Image (tube, rainbow, N blue to C red; front, side, top):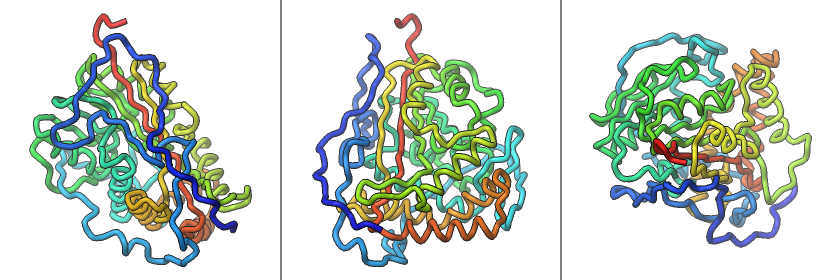
Length: 379
């Protein structure tokens, strides 16, 4: 493996792609409770043209990176309006069984801990912001689509106690307590949505890659159920690991990992490519949203960055990957590509060995897109 390249100075600010602004686009003040309402993300992780500066001594082995994380990395609380436990067991891991498709990731405790690690990593990557859309100070109805453990919905409910927050997911994996303004419902976003039209002030979507057959249809549903003037935001991640400091050959496990996951999802009629190029932005514009903004970020997948916050974000993402790899692969690679469980475990071990090497300076492309539903009569 090649050594890290010369360090590149970080840019103080990165540009993001936007659609033409509507004449009636409102400007929104910052949330009084945090810096997370509609402010631009800056820093060396933002934009694909920048290079995150690497720390020194990256060749030192680090087999226990998660020990540097600290102990307070998860939120608690949650409630359910329905108790639906339709689980299957595959190679010792539990998966849900929804009406529309078999979701590719497990819903057991091990995987759910990884979701909370990912949430906190992304929070740091976004500059301690839960979202980037300029939703204003007083959102009333908020939907967190594919809420997972409910951690984003809970954090949002704490931040905006006057908002009614609904988190939906295929599995009832949310914790036992919630803020009084947060509730969880078991729902499949691929089925017909039962909420009224023009209902939500903000719809938040995150990490549904590999599970949606038609992203244009999903964004169209979100558009239909968002109030005029309301916002929709989606964050999706790539499955490929890239590096700006090390040349990754075609036969490297990072490249192979991306290829086999993309192939397996395509066989299921889903895609892991949604974060590539401008697919999210273009689908959101096609759905009718205006003021569409696209932000590309590099999420470090270990503690190799020199910047302390990006280093911590990378350690959290590494910890998530370290405990989640087998869960990612066991369903997709056995069911879609015909691998044996033993082959999947060996493949994950090979990937894990490389992801542990900080000197690889790996990062994962992360795309955030948000847009506004026009006001009635707006042109």
